[in-house]
Image (cartoon, rainbow, N blue to C red; front, side, top):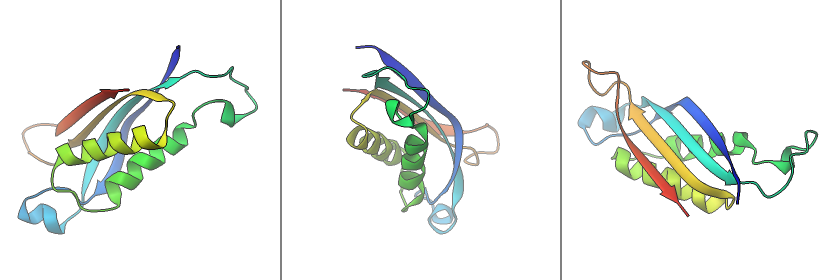
Length: 119
């Protein structure tokens, strides 16, 4: 089945993430990059958003999972993000999510975790 790739690049979310003492009390920015391969099941109707997968919904899901509660590990968060996308959007055949902490170390741009899943 043909797919259409949707991507979100450098979504910045203020999150409660981390296991270190200072991370348990202060929120920090996360940068999220994501790719979603959605099955093309109908012809695009330029006047009807329902004829495609609305990427606003994907963005909102990423924000809700990342900002709604404290998570100790980035590994846990990327798993939760992938779970939410796969459970909520059955048309998604493949998801790739990268979450990074830009303030983790002063000597690099960011550190992060990436996951990729296919159905």
